[in-house]
Image 1 (cartoon, one colour):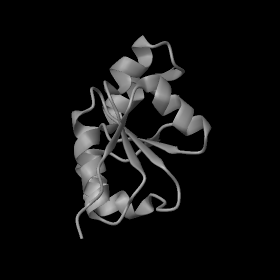
Image 2: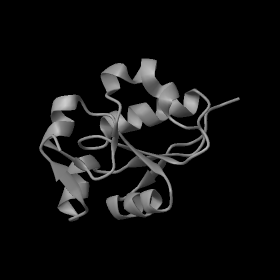
Image 3: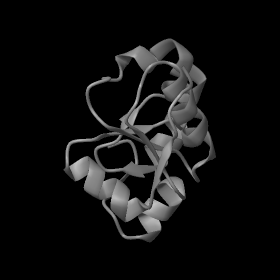
Length: 109
């Protein structure tokens, strides 16, 4: 059995998925997350991802986000290889999310 294909979404599409019930998962490191992150994002740093991915629900769509889209793509591919099926990578990452004017949290709030 081969892993599924990782979906891709623009920041606006990603926000719509989250509003529809998807979980937004930020895979950057804690210091990056503390600087700025998409509102509502759950942090699981890529450096801890292989040991913590099981915390993520398999019965809910997941939208992966990082700074620009590369690390979240790797995390998404990893999830597909480990039994997850509804996984989307957010193109452009947090930078694109913020540039689109979508809700963010700045500082360690």
